[in-house]
Amino acid sequence: MEPMVRALFTVCDIEDKVIVSAEIPGVDITERPVFYKGVGRIKGSYIRVGESDEPMSEYEVYSYEAFRKRIRDDIRTVDEAKLQLLDEKRLNDYLTMVKQERRNLSENVSKEEILELMAVMVCNVPTLAGIMTFSKYPQTYFPQLCIIAVCLPGTEMGTIGESGERFIDNKRITGAIPDMLEEAVEFVRKNSRTKTIIDDNGKRKDKPEYPIKAVREAILNALVHRDYSLHTENTPIRIERWLYG
Image (spheres, rainbow, N blue to C red):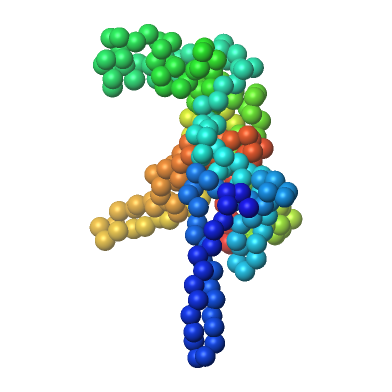
């Protein structure tokens, strides 16, 4: 095995029987995964699932490699990206905000240097983070880094509605992260019920099925904290709204 596995053996007597135990200590995370050298790291790495040992996927192995080598997939450069496709107004608004919050930057650092420091650019080439935040249409370079939002009848995938419909609403949401956020929140709002409550004073109050503030936070977290590695470029974020009747 690589790295070397050294078990801790213990021997004891229980009811006139000799019991031998072997404890396998976990290796440091920087040395994982431990793999069988005979077939290599990709095919020789396993993960415990229930009571069985299952081969690790290429992505699971890569996640350890990325941690060990401090790979930042979100700030890798997109060499084919064109600077003219960045939203200049949004970029300028961001620079203004950064300068207001960090006075020393506005006084001592140029616009180009700020973009480098904030990982929007590297050597005047946009990063993936810069593209996803400031490009007019990031899906030009990453078609699947979008949101697939569906509103479904019933309680299970594949359920057909009373009129034979498979989807009540279905939308592919594209654009930069700020644009996808607003459009996704609106999709959830449109496909959610609203309760009408009359309080003790006889006044009407509308209560949405889901708190929009919480919906917005959940979608924003999905967009900002999703895995942007090469292994997930073909995996869009999914929003599924189920109608139970």
